[in-house]
Every structure is written in C-alpha cells, then in structure tokens.
Length: 350
View 1 (cartoon, rainbow, N blue to C red):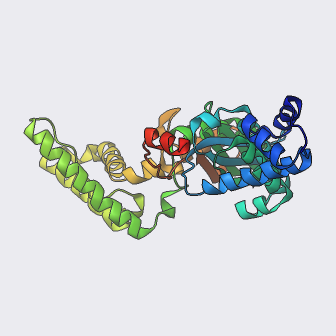
View 2 (cartoon, helix red, strand yellow):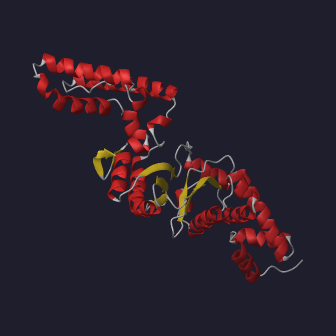
C-alpha cells in the first residue's frame, strides 16, 4: 500500500476543498491514486448533497445583470440552507456565474439550466460548499428600441427587480430609464405582486374583501373598548369592484349628504370630485397594496405609479406605460423549518 503523505493530502484538499480528514481517508482507500480519490470525494459529496434534499433552502442571494445599453436584463434567485453560506465568497461567485449563464444562454427554465453543461459546474460547486443549494427561479426581459428597461438590486443582494415600459419613441425610451430605476426601487420596497388591479381574479378579490372587513370589525371592537375613533369599514377593496353603478350610487350618496348638511348646490362641483376620490381611495386598499400601477408612488404619494410614469413621459414629450415587471425576494413564500440546533449537532456527531 502506498504511503499517504501530508503533501498528498494538502494537494487533494487544494483541488477539491474537501475536509482534511476526508481527503486522507479517500487517499487511503484509493491507495494514493489522486484521480480515484478525487472521484470518490465527488461521489460522496454528491451523495451528501442528496441526503440534504429534504432540508429547506430558504436563505441565499439574488443576482442581477443588465446590458450597458439597457437592452436586456436578468434576475435570478439562488437559495441556500443558511445565511452563513450566503456570505461565503464561493457562493457569491456562484450567484454571479449563474446570472451570467442565464443572461447569455437564456435557458427556458430551471430544469433546462441544470441539464446544461453549466448544471454540472453548479453541482460540482455546491458539492464543495457542502450544503443544499438550488436555483429557485429567474427571469430575463429583452427590450426593443422603443421599450425602456431598467432594474435594481438592493444592497443586501436579496431583492432584485426589473421594470419595462413601452414608449412612443426611442427618445422617450432613453429618457425614461432613470425614472424606471426609481420605480424599480419603489417596487423593491413596496412589494407589489401584480401589475394592475385588472390582473386580480374575481374570486380572490371577493375572498380578500370578506377577510379584510372582518379584520377591521375586530379592530373596531378593541378601539370601541378603548373609546378611540373607529376605522372606516369599506364595502369594497378594489377598483375592479367599483362599477359605474357603484360609483354613481357613491356620488348620489355624497350629494344627499351635502343636502342634509345644507350645503348650497352651486358649490357641489367643488366638493363632489374630492369626496368621490376619497371614496375610491378608501375602497381600493387591495390595489394600493398589491398592484404596482395602482400603488401610491413613494417619491410623490399624491400620484400613483402609473400617473407618475405618465407625467414623466409627458415631460419628455412622449408617452410611456409599464408593461412588465419582475420582483424576486430571496425566500419569499418558502416555509422555513424550525429545527432543534442542539439535536441536529448531536445527530451529526453520532
């Protein structure tokens, strides 16, 4: 049997990044054959990753790439089990490499990405890191000459956004890029889940309406007990519910209230529009929370995002309308498991 020297162990560790004792063990099994020892480590590393398949990968980082000419942008979310690994330089480089691969070759989905040559490289890298790591989702948006495109990645590298807007001309598209960067930052902070209230499913809106009204009623019970002002209980929560009939009735109710207050009819035209606008605002809370175009713009909360984009385009002498966005936040929607750390350590040492 070949003598296993410290130099051999050091060399194998340098090329595989495997733990020292594992390197020594496989070298003994391989009778000093470096290639065979490397293959044994690779096989066992992959097996080790496979054993972790039932673990939850809810930490990680987001990646973001945008072309110098703003013609294409890619975002990707790669998950890890622990935040500690997410701070590892090798993992951070893996994010960059993954984003570059997606940006360059545009695989159709995660399965296609992992079936490519890059997938083997990805697997080899996570074997060395020694933790469950997976690409969760990604998106690439490509812009034509009249589409403005920009994006943003938050400083913690856990939230990435791309925004695209269709414009009337190349000039307007170029001028709108800075505005879209601001909208992307807004999107990062305000967490919209859809573009417009028009995207909501009717059943979802109905369910949310019932739930939200019940929550406010319960809050009002507590406010009443504390002798504090009660919250307004809305009848609706989305513009999708405010039909012409609903708005006409709201206007009639406003006018009836003005009559009861003894307000002269000649000044109604100065009061009714504002009162109707407040009615709409009070009854579109779902839109303001979840629909990007209908949210109050953080840089000017007197405007919605749609209105702010429209105003910026008009200032450039053109038109622009946001048509697409993607917002990735690491771990969003993943249910994290709660583990007993002491028991986990004891199990690993057994």
